[in-house]
Every structure is written in structure tokens, then in C-alpha cells.
Image 1 (cartoon, rainbow, N blue to C red):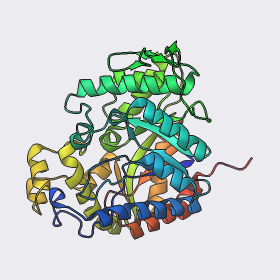
Image 2: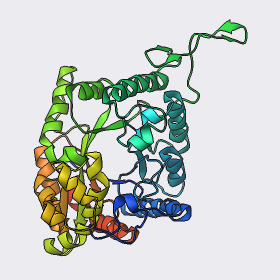
Image 3: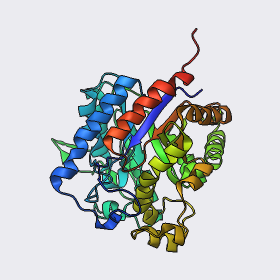
Length: 387
């Protein structure tokens, strides 16, 4: 049953003007001081969620975003800080973009955070989707096959380092350790110092294309899946495909087990009010993500229109109501959200987590109000029965 409520906060500042008639995404540029305000905002979100009984706050690793949309470059440092200003909330890495790291530095940093937060840091890995970020750090992004190949080798190394007291690796991209003399002997293996205390390591990865190769890789390493973004509009496919990948590996799981669905939500006292209020946030989401391929079904002319001020209806840019029908977005009353999540629970009996996220560009005050509303009027409907 669903009993763990989580959210993704990608790290946007309060932008000010919002929606299709506001500043185009590529024209947004803010001062360093304004961009740094994201850290206080993240702390405020974490404190509110902790006080209201939310399970996990997922943060997103991104770089160089002067546009103000995703401004958290180091999730593990944030997790250590947030764990010291909260009591129970888990901080999820959603996700550490592995191609932008040396795998052993990522493994060391996570292990350090695991120890310092007493297990409240949740590991997560991803391949990335911003060319500006991944290619700048010297890893492939335009070449998707090269990106996946590098990612898979890096994750293999990370799990070796987590699970084996002594390990070595000989692959296409890494030879670990290098065969060099060290203090009178020839180096043949390494030990990660420190290793995570809490093992096995809980690890999550986004499910986007739901390819058999990607899902088989996840199952082989015990990686759980987050179905969000474009994939949440076709949730049936990825969720069944993950169960089938587990079966190929000889593991029988319930439908929805080890998965969570991401839904962008906004609550109000009526559905009409909620749609009216979420629309500028949704439009800012489209401005940001349509050129990156994360607005399913949008056409190139519509992407071009979304990069300009206004005129979206004439260009046929999909409205938020379109994606509400597909299940990726929700706007309505708390009672209607309970009904919506109960529907997911009945369709996916193995699912325990649901990810309810305020849309990109939602102001801090609105985010805090929405998280409290969910805690007070939605989450109680999903409490496990008393024993």
C-alpha cells in the first residue's frame, strides 16, 4: 500500500514573473546572490516537510543554471546540512549525475554522507539530460550510447566499492587501481574509505525510456525506479516493464513494487481554482523542459512557440488539462487527490511511495502551503491500519 509521501524539489528560486507571457526561459539571468537564495529555500522546504511527516525530500543535481530553475550543484553536501536541521526526513539524491563524477569520488562522498546523516541520505544515480552540464564536465551526452556505456561502467564500480572490502576493476573507461608501485608493493586492489555503514545501499534511478537494457541493469543492481517526467504519462508501460525485468532476473515482485510515480500537483478548494493557479507554473515548466524533450508529444513548432512570449494557444501548445488527463499532472481538491492516489494504489498493489511535487517555479510560500495541506488532508487517508 502507498504510505510514503515524497517530493522532488529541483532547486528553483522564486522567479517573480511566471507563465507564457513572462520572461522567456533563455532570457532569464539572475545575480549570484539571488541564485544562492535557493539554499535558504531548500532548508525551509525540508523543515516544513519534516514537521509534517513527509518521508523523503528528493533534490536534483544541476549546474550552471543562471536561469534560476535548478540551482543545487551538490546534493550530498545539502543532505548533510539538512539532516542536521531536521529530525526524521530522508534526503534523496534525485539524482547524482554519474557521468559528471569520478565514480570513486561519488562513492566516497555518499558513504561520508551516509555516516554523517545516520542513514538518512538516499542514494540515486542518473545519466543526465543537459548537454551544457554533462559535456562541460567532459562526459558524452549528445552520444547517447556512449553516455549509457560510461554510466553503466561507473555504477558497476560504485557498487563494487560499496559491497567489497577489496575490489578492482578493468573496463573500457577505468582501470582501478592502476598497477603502480606503492610503499614497497605492487598495487592490485583498493578499499573504499569510508564504506557506507547502512548496507545494502538503497539506490534509485529515473525511468525514462523504460528500455529492456536499462531496466535489466537496474534490477541486476537492486536499483529502484522513479517513474516521472515524460514516463509518468505512460506509467502502465514502465511499471509493467520493470516487473517483467525482475521476472527475467528470477525475482517475482508485485506490480509497482520498488517503484514510485511522480505527479505534479496543486490543491485548491475547487478544481477550477486549482487549474487556474497551476497554469503559470505549468507554463514555466514547458518553457524550461520542452526544448530538452521532457514534454511528451509536443511538436517542434510548439517548442519554438513556447520559447516566445504568448501565442501558445494559436500554436497548439498543450495545456495543463491535457497532461492531467494523462495522469502526469493533478489539479483539484484534497479529496480529489486522495481519490487519485487511491486509484494508483489499487492499480499497483506493490507500490509504497508516491512522489507529489509542486511544479517548477512554484514560489516558496505556495510550496510550504501545499506540503502542509497534503499532510493534513491527504496523507491521513493512507495511514496503515492499527494492529
